[in-house]
Image 1 (cartoon, helix red, strand yellow):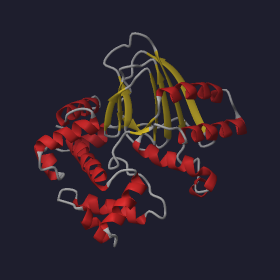
Image 2 (cartoon, rainbow, N blue to C red):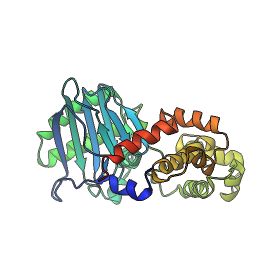
Image 3 (cartoon, rainbow, N blue to C red):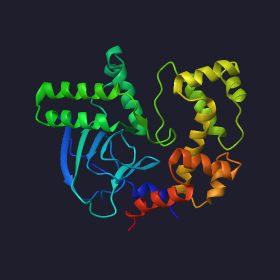
Image 4 (cartoon, rainbow, N blue to C red):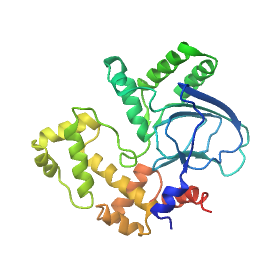
Length: 299
């Protein structure tokens, strides 16, 4: 069993090669294997993989498998990695763009014209998967950007980020608990709502309980939650609880049933159904897959 200490030690802390004088770096690699351990770093990263169908992807507490074209953005300190069991039939192309988290100041990002990019960087804290069609387009941009220098290179990066920011059909991968999203200055009530749910996630929580804490009617709070997060109160609560579940699956020695009840799920059949719907595998399969990658670092 993995405990919290092993989990923290076995997620590699990568020190990237971006100097303080560089805006970003881009690397192109042809690979038959993806074996670099699950890791984190302080930089934002955009990772593109072409020709790697079937490679396993881990982002935060998300586990999935990629198609022919993969484009994912991850934020600072979010565990991530791509993995193969052996050699691929053909070489896959991996293109990685990284830029420092202090490249854009808060004052800069809070200008009206940067609203979309600010939201993109916030969402990257959970990992963002873009469409295969956009991956093909971004590949051409990255080829061009690698050859660009100076001021034009910085503008090219901004244009790329803007394109990603306004792209449709992107998917957030990791749960809100693994890397909580920042909220805008006028979203203090939303922050209080999540704080309340985090304190009481193991108990029964009714919409009326949080509405009362925020001094709202149930109808007003329900509309507020949907407008702020795009999900209902119940959907947010389930995702938050599942976030606690996934963390405990790899950091405690409790049984799956004990973890489920601890996190507020009192019906195991319903819990297993919800977990598989959200994570794409059973809790047991999730624990085995995630633990396998972490245990590669043991020793």
